[in-house]
Amino acid sequence: MSEKLIQLRVEDSVKDKADEIFKAQGLTTQTAIKIFLTQVANTGQSPFDNLFSGK
Image (cartoon, rainbow, N blue to C red):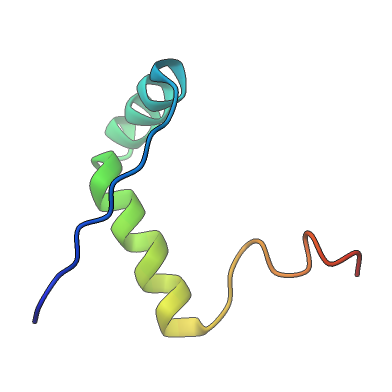
């Protein structure tokens, strides 16, 4: 299986807070993002569905 690198910039305070939350759940931020993307790919649904469409 080949992989692609995703890079993003986020404010330090946001990253630090997210890191703390994920660590308490036994996850790294990288793993949490992988889980999120995998779930979207597997289900075809996003938590953002209809959020911006005005529905």
